Image 1 (cartoon, one colour):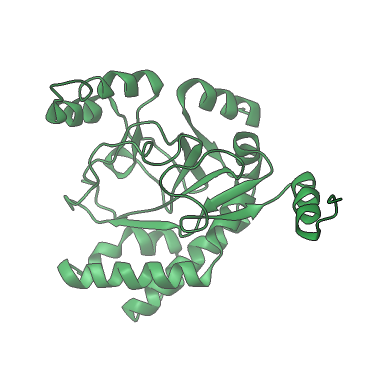
Image 2 (cartoon, helix red, strand yellow):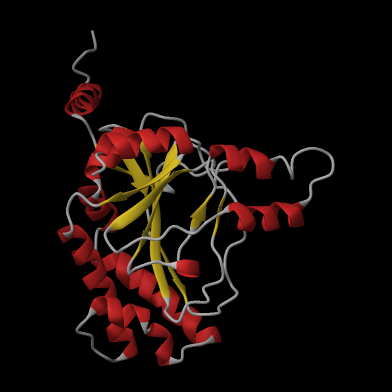
Length: 260
């Protein structure tokens, strides 16, 4: 059975790892809040959260109606649950080792809904730059992922390979996309596991050709006292946790305890 040390070692080597939650209660709270808000907008009810989310496409939302639903659901979801803190509580053993005790988190959690055969997926890319290389991305599915229902992250060596295709004077973006899709294998995951990856890795999401809707969230954590990219504090990141040492130092600064 893998341990936190194993997951952290894999992250250090590859740039990513898939790890289970320390606690499931925070994740159930997140998923229940999501389903409650979605059911309210659809004027329906649910008894099994996973079945409700997997079968979302049966409600027939398309085009502008689907986009309006997404926008309003994301607003309600972020207002109804402290997702960043609950994710930290669920995966604290790994996140604490990756980020330390002084933690900043992305201000708003991203929610993604991709129905079967929906071609509107993000192309292969990496976040850093312009994001800071001192960020860890947490991608969590709300239901079991298999086949094309998952997400693929290229490891550090694979990322170097594909980035070489678009560096230099004659970048080949088509080859970059096709090669990324070719070597990126979507992770198979159950609800309760999350994919942790370094912001400098290329990642890609295939068109979901499975008969179930893909629901996922993603957010970013970093140590407060590390460099920021173009997305910094307080517009994009907010403090989440402070160590006793940092609290002592900040309090001393605020009260001017050490002046004179």
